[in-house]
Every structure is written in C-alpha cells, then in structure tokens.
Image (cartoon, rainbow, N blue to C red; front, side):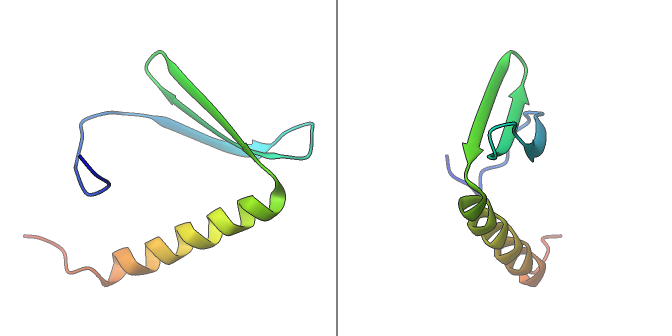
Length: 64
C-alpha cells in the first residue's frame, strides 16, 4: 500500500501552536492519537509541500 491507495478510514486532523513554541499536527483515528511537533521552520517546509501537492493534484485528470 502506498500514498495512492484509497482506504476507508476516517481520521481527524488538528493543527495549532503548542505552549512550547512548536507547531503540532494532531491526528486521531479511532483509539489512535498521533501528536507530531515541528519547529516553525519545519512547519513552513511542510506547508510548502502540502501546497505543492495541492497544485499537482489539481493538474491530475480526474478518473471517470
């Protein structure tokens, strides 16, 4: 399985600052919770990757 494999799993994503000056991505799926903390520069890099992926996704011809 890879990033292109569809799954029937629901998850909740929350993003926000911590009291330690980090940016936290908090993922919750069922009983699983994954807190991931990044310094602001790393968070900027992640945001740029997400925006690049969104641009690439827009250019993909939709199936159907």
